[in-house]
Length: 88
Image (tube, rainbow, N blue to C red; front, top):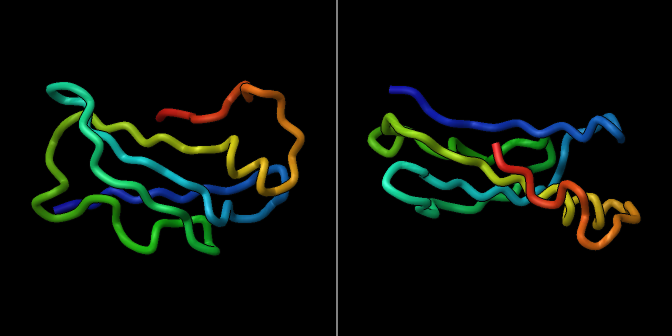
C-alpha cells in the first residue's frame, strides 16, 4: 500500500518551511476534515498523512496556511493576504 506525504520548501529563504500548518480533507461525498499537521524542521510531516487502510482511493485536498507562516517569518502582508490558505 502507498502513503501520502508532503514536503514544503520556503523558496524565498532557501530553507524548509518549518512550522507550516497543513490541513487534510477528503472531498468525496462532501468535504470531510481528516487532520491537521505542522511541518517539522525539514519542512515535512513527522509521518505519513495517510497510509495503510486510511490511504484509500479518492479525491483529497491539502490546505497550506502560508499567510500565517509568512507573518511569523516577518513578512508584511496585506489583510486579507492574496494567498493566505492555499488549497492543493
